[in-house]
Image (tube, rainbow, N blue to C red; front, side, top):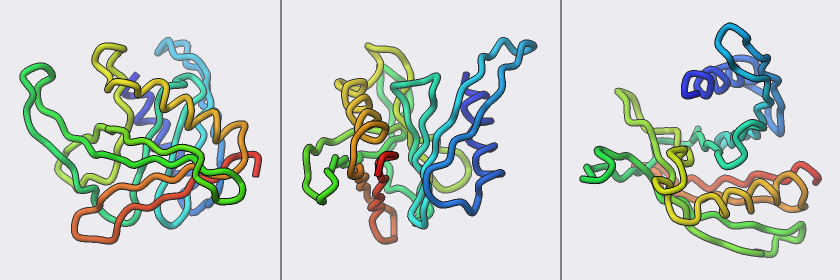
Length: 171
């Protein structure tokens, strides 16, 4: 699943590197690998990218074009090493009125390069952060059926803050 996830992201960036706005990309089934067809949805602008998938309702990914996330890393005796960021999420209506706000913890993959990507944890109910599933459902429901936007705010290391507004698809 992780390889499909990474492959779909790479496809999105290769095909739509300069596109701004909502883009959908059909990922074909592969009988050999035993994967089913799905659609990847992404929104991008100058600040970053928001991605979610039709086959993985409870997950999304943020990518920063503005700089490296100011991440927290360490070691937990329960889960091993970790890397993650705290993100403030705001759900807004069509008149720029805040409907709801909450904080989320997103995992990041710390490789050799800068940490510019963060994603929801996909480790099963007991291993995911408390309330993550409900929060993601609120975000995706608003983006797919509501009007307005969802705002993501996170600290960036040695740069301006990541302040990313993702408009609803129905705007």
